[in-house]
Image (cartoon, rainbow, N blue to C red; front, side, top):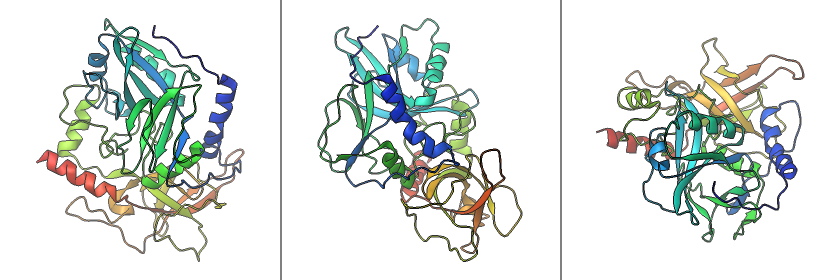
Length: 374
């Protein structure tokens, strides 16, 4: 077993801190203050993420057959974005994978960052495929290592990590020992401010926003965010992923959205803007999005958010002016969209309007994919 770092953080404190961002996302009946907007230069500890350690002689080969990205065979102090899929090509876990060296044993290994609620499930998934591979798999204790996100004009950090390349200007990911505090040129902010930043950029994270065994990697933008190597050989879930890339059309994608009042005099926003003082009630996760003026099938699904912004799985040619086929877009500036939900125990029913925005960086990533296919 690799050595463990002694932590000065108590587990009850960690659990208490982690509970803060979760309540604002999941419970629409409790009124909690919205997190402040993200400053240009800052860093945040991510209590919503945990680590699984995979180490040993066969670690690189073992992970190569399970993830959507190529696993390096040589040690480099870096990290990269990837995903684990099930056999039918649906997302199990979106992850960051960090190369990790046990200096005392001289063993190469990897730290896999995953949604904190899925860390045990990921460990079980890995052990299922271990067979005779010479690898060790363990969940890293909560106080042993800590995960941080940094962005803006920061000086280099010492620790394991690398660039977060899911979207432009997402910053860096850094792992340090749990009893240390990251020191940077910006100021430390709460995890909610980091979430606001990535939602504004249209970056989904975790199985609350990429529903497990339901979401498809392309619909979740894992391809646009650099999490899939389409030239890679066989891995679990590859068949549907590659077939969609080469022959299919991705009609739905996760987009940032802004919600606003359903009152008659309300107008849709011209640009995506976060309002920290918003009192609007967020819809329940999984609520359907539909046209206001017309009864028709669902055109999207609300995934979650904060304040007056969130993420939704949207039909591109209906909710945006994106053109995917010769038929063209069915979108019009006159079309309004809504999320309506029925009352349930402990929660009132409601209705809000929603407008989707295509992040500017999507176009560049789409063009890059087209070049690779040609």
